[in-house]
Amino acid sequence: MGEQAQAKGMSAGRQAGRPLDATPHGERRAELAAANRLEDLPALLTPQEVSRSFRVSLGKVYEDVRSGSLKAISIHWGRRVYIPRDALIELLKGGEL
Image (tube, rainbow, N blue to C red; front, side):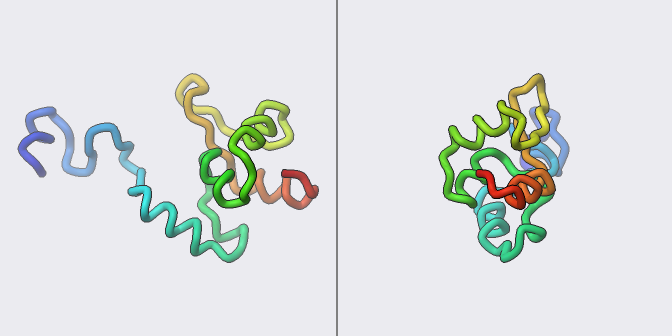
């Protein structure tokens, strides 16, 4: 563990500003790119990941979340939005997005 992390009282598995379960962006993008089937996607996706993966605007993703046609999980008083893979599959089977 780095001296700075020790000085700030952080554990070895946690870096400043990063949740314990977060993966670096490069690994996350590689994981999304490697998903050949919808079932291979991560269980939760950010609106940015949905936008990038399905080539729709970020505004369209948020519009669908607000309208309720795309189910989402809001965490941290609505500041973080995650879209469950199953909700995305359900929406795509209906021909939307």
